[in-house]
Image (cartoon, rainbow, N blue to C red):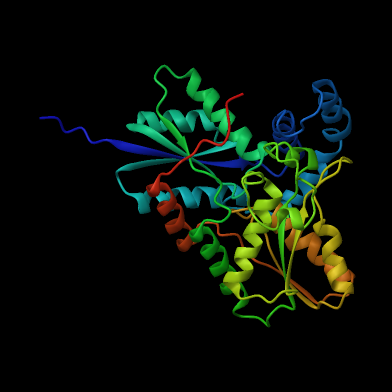
Length: 354
């Protein structure tokens, strides 16, 4: 009698991180990251020139100094160890019927070996969860394209399904809201809560318009999710913010949305976090809380960009205290929410391998 027990596989994907807070390590990471045509989606010759003459000679040293501000002396990169913690927690939560692996789109651990480890562990099918709440061609699209490329190179590729963007998933919203309440429980209530999402070039947002022609980057065009904008990163971000504001019981005017981390001179989606935060201070906001719901793991963009630089900017502009709300990381509520999404299946492919 056969003792074979079918296992399912779960591949978690996050963006990636340098393996050390040094200029050489950051340079290696940035070269891989920014060479991706889905990230810098311009003419290949222009991308090569931009990377080799404008970015890599200067940015690694500055970024390495920023990484050192948040690097753990015992665990290393926050994005990596928070992602590893989530992976371990999901192994316990899902049990022996599941094999769970983590792959980074750039850097270590890579997606390819992670997918092959799932097959070696006996997984007869694989669910892929990009750990990006909101769809973007430069994150979700690139990660899934890499998965498909790896699968195509395997002698026996496993059946693969991908879980959709979870920007409005009830478990995700409840987890972020719960972490926010916990973070604010031991301090004076903030005068304002800012939901700061990672930014994108406008052209990448327009690329997901699906032919509706309504993408105007205005508040009104992101006021609701429709068939035409269902893959629009900006519309999904606003949907997350509205859901969080409702869950937290925030009054109109007590919260707002902005977009951070823009790079280069091309138009990026607005409003910009580094302009909104000083403006809030000048408007009279003394205590500001900032949540970053486009990240599920704390990283350079949350801990350093918001927790250090934005806090200094807020104080210089007249504010008193900026409180960074932690990401969901491996919070038990988030672990449960991910497990429920995974078990529910209902996966819909969102990107092609092209």
